[in-house]
Length: 479
Image 1 (cartoon, rainbow, N blue to C red):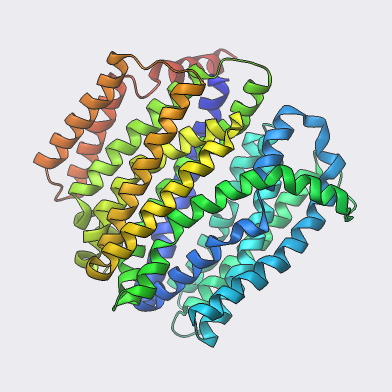
Image 2: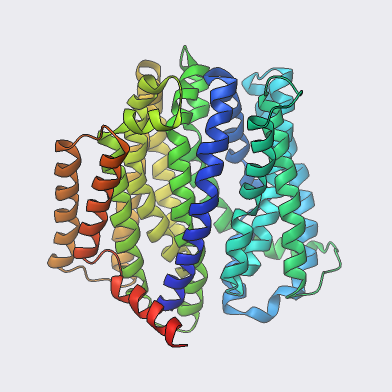
């Protein structure tokens, strides 16, 4: 399982490193530079609002599907058509609920129009995720890796033409960007359906009330968990835009830093996408998950500590590599946003294991605590500090929840952390902190040199499984 995890993680990393940074920094950041911080800030707020309630499109069905296909592969074809019928009913409920809240918040007609497109996009994304949940459940990681980058690849091609090829369409508008995403998601969904058809036959879509109630009862704990996690991670930009006197611009500044965090989150989620079906399968077979858990924790946590500390001390320089304006203002929140990536990585790792274990009650309790802390800090800090206050609230919230989930993993695995293992994390954090505090980055070569130094420290301390990579490569060459 460790070899399967490492080989497929390497494949997913390569594909995502090729495609997603170009989409995020070459396309998405260029869009913000073209339309300005205020227009993009409104879009960013609406996007996060659409994400806030997108759990209503899923209600935990995707996680439920991945776990149960990994443990019982023969069940997928039995209920696929019935689940799809539930999806369309959930779309109607999601749209009505979202628009009801949007009217209360007082968005104007143009903003409500943009929100409608974004709601459609969320439905397409959820359907793609549903197809991917089958790929993950069947451990078809190569196909899942391809589908995971297809929409971003299409976005690069279409939006790249509109942004960089001379044309007569006029000034680029944020509405174009949203519609291009719709096209990309729709094509990706069609491709996903065709690939899934190769494994299981296309179902007959039917609705059965008793089945619907049964599947929703089993999925609701997953849905509640995802909803709670979304609330404490996605409400920041909405609260900034609503309660700060310069809300739209502050939300735009926050978006500059959040874009890189979101890119890193996508890479960190590759761990979850691989580990969740692997953990589910191993737990179903009563296999020991501790070696896989520890090796993946070292790799992701070591990398997140390196990235978080690097960005904290060199925020303005990194932002200047991506954006043309507002970098000084955005840097104040950026350093805190990227520091929160450490806690976020912990949540991804520890939460994935606890979800596969079925310990959803504890996860929901910690998420409720996260919401309380996040809302309280945001209402206290945002009116005075704007985007920076929201970023500080994010660091505190993510770190607290990660710590609580780690404690739970130690209890239920059971996991014994030795003093030498804990010391490695302390030593690594101290070395990296001193390195980036003393050597401030002024050019690209220094960025490469210091990052490489950090990776070497990771390898020396055993955070990077060098031997496993060498063994994997050697075995492939022998084969």
